[in-house]
Image 1: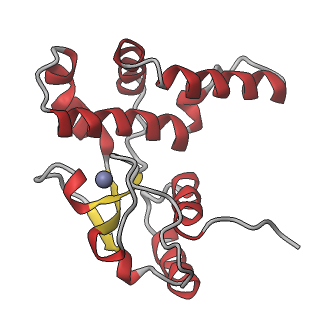
Image 2: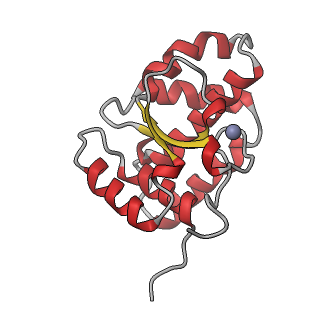
Length: 175
Ligand SMILES: [Zn+2]
């Protein structure tokens, strides 16, 4: 295990994660977003839950291509520009996120779970989640075994999982 594990920070708060404080979690985000939507729209969520919803929205766009671009776009360049727009828009704040939330809930990907890398405390209690403590996936060998295991689940979201692996171990490219 490298000295920088995991390579990336928490998907929810952005801060560095210590091995013992973090988890990879997978869950059906649709129910969570539906539950929190009204309070989110009305500005009634506390800071922690609001940050959680913002990160779910961002991760949905990142892990499920069906939300990220207009399917009528033909060229790779056009799709790339639209994905870039989506990433830039995220920084402009909640008015944009409300639109995105509506879009996600209109055509939810109900059969696939979303993956998060986060501090355990950054995820609100009471969600029915599939948790992997970081110490159970802190080497490339363990991650490979988890990949075999998870890929057999019918809810497996390979794009999200690849993102998790990159966040855990980084990426050096093939040679
Ligand atoms: Zn966090």
